[in-house]
Length: 177
Image (tube, one colour):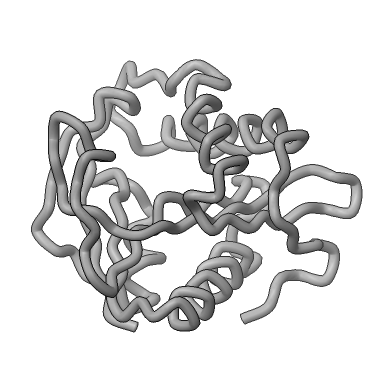
């Protein structure tokens, strides 16, 4: 799968932080269509500290799809998967040969154009290059994105957790490369 021709693929820089925050806010806002009544998305920019680290410290492999005018409309990010420690997810031990996909975002105005699939394919190619054989991710339990993942060969793996940050239940997915 390839990106639409009006998009450039690039690695984010610290200067992209506001554009990444805007993309995440637009995606979070789309949750209102299926989230429980009264649900409110996190404040715009609230995830920026976490993303700042991912963008600048090299701990995640991250790529963005950017329109010719500069708007970020897609993002994918992965890192080494860790064992789950509920009190501190970053405290887990590495899981051999498994990558954790921590983000697949596409701006709602650009859904169904193949952007997410192209970004995820690119990430999976990189995961193979780095020796990963298994993948995992979390997604909101009631999100339409579950259909996208399942169509791409992902399967629910039985993990569930509550995200206080999002105010939503999450489910885990797994895929073999």
